[in-house]
Each structure stands twice: as C-alpha cells, then as structure tokens.
Image (cartoon, rainbow, N blue to C red; front, side, top):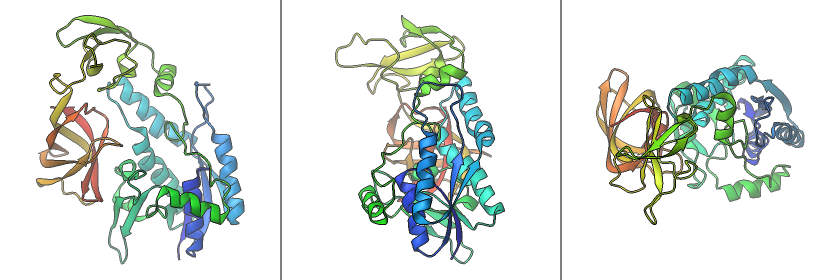
Length: 360
C-alpha cells in the first residue's frame, strides 16, 4: 500500500477519490491547494473559502489528516503570468491544461514527494494503467465519455503520470454521486465548479480587462471593409461568434472572428461557413511537445483532439524540425487557434500533446 496525498478541491470528485483510496487500504492525507485569492476584486465568483471548508469537512468525515498547502506564489508565476503573457502575445493559452502539469502534478507533487508521499491522487476522470515493475504508466480516457478529462492532463510528463492516481476514472458521474452518498460525503450533491482553473467562475474577458489594457482598433471583413470597433485583440479568439458586436448582413449566417492582425491592430470577421478564408484548415505546426509514448522523430498516424469537447479527428504526424511536428487532418478543422492544446490519442490511450503554433 502507498502513502498518497489527495488534492481535495472541495468538490465531489476529489472527495470520492480520497474515500476510494482509503478504502483500498492506502495511507491517505487530504491537501487543499491554496492557489488563488481574488484580492483585486475581479467581477465573478471565487468561492475558495467555501471550497476550503468543504474540503476540511470531507477530511473530517473520512477521519484523515488535512493540510492547506500554500501555492499562491507558484500559481502566479506559473499560471497567471503564463496566461497574461500569452494573451499579450496574441495567442489563446489554455490555463487548465498547464495548471495540471505545473500545479497539481508539478509543485503540489513536489511537495508530496518531499513530505514522504508516494503519489498524488485527484478526482480527474481519466484512467491510469500499468506502471508496475518499473514500467511507465499509461494514461487513458475516462470511462464516462461526457466527463473524460484526459485532454486536460495531456501535457503531463511521464514521471508525473507514474506518480498520479485517478480512482474515479473508471466510473460514470452518476456512480460518483451515488457512491459519495453511500460514503456520507458532505459534497455528494455539490455542483461542479466552473471557470478558470482555481480562479473560479470569472469571465475571461473580465480577468483580462483587469490586467491587460484595452487597445481599440477596427473590425474589418476579409475584403477590408470596416464594420466596427474592437476593444483589444486579446479579448477575442478565432471562431468566436458572439461578443464582437458586429451583426452579419447575411440572414442566418453569423459573423465570426477569422483572423487577428497584430501589425494593423485589426480584427477580421467573416461568415461562419466552410468557404470563408482562414476559418477552416487541415495543416498545422505543433510545438511544445510532450510525449506519453509518441515518437516525434518518425511519421505516424493517430487521432488528434484539437480542443476540449471536440471529437478526436484522424490525422497524420510528421517531424517538422528538431522540436516541432506538422499535422495533417483528414477533414478540415474549424478555427484552430495558436496557443491552444491538441492531444494525440491511439484509440483511448493518450500518447502525447502539443501547442498549436502555426495554422497553415
């Protein structure tokens, strides 16, 4: 049996993860990651105090030790600064994916190992397989197709997966709720959290407005016609249908963001249809590669999930240079966005991930 530090977030999934690991005979300690406090009064709900109370109540119910691990400075350095720098540079970063690699299985795992723990457990809907006798562990999609969170874990390093435990990954959400009731967990019927990782239900536009100054400019169509004004290119993302403030003159077909021109500070909108230039593509360059079995030095075929809640699509992968690959989707993909994450799968097994750098 192992000594496991479970990241208790105050939600039902991590609560049951702790209960299951305890039931399996492991030595379990609950740890609440204190990563963010909304001291700048950004509009939105940041319920960390309630989450902390709920996490403590779960630990008390299970009769396990409970710790508060202060990671605020690490979170600012590794996640908030990364997020803001990405938007300032004109890309659309994914804080949730990097939060898992840099925080939950980064500094929190480092803390656990330093404190003598063998592994970190969380309530993610993903399956860890293998890892015995010195073999590397594998990461597979969660059993619940509506809750699978392997995409958000896709940038994890092999040594992090080896130390991770995901006890609810084999379960459906309905089963998690029901079993949590049987354990008498106080979070059994608590609603799932929303919003940015650890920050809460805060609109990204409100978050960015607080830290990145507006830089207004023109909104134009692909043929150069000025149709409106934007507040700042960092507040928009490719494929965005709402919130740009420009009504389409074409009945039944909305305007969407198809390009951001940082040289001219212009936002380009076009019709949301397949023949709109720049909206669909099959070719991309992927960097910041992370492997859980993928060999980036040789061509191969797999399925690639270009964003959360999208289907994995058939694609071929070829080396592009010493640290990037070129992917070719069999079918055109809509609004692929620099800075976002794409996850590579062999069936249900996650084999790696990377960041969109160039959309060709």
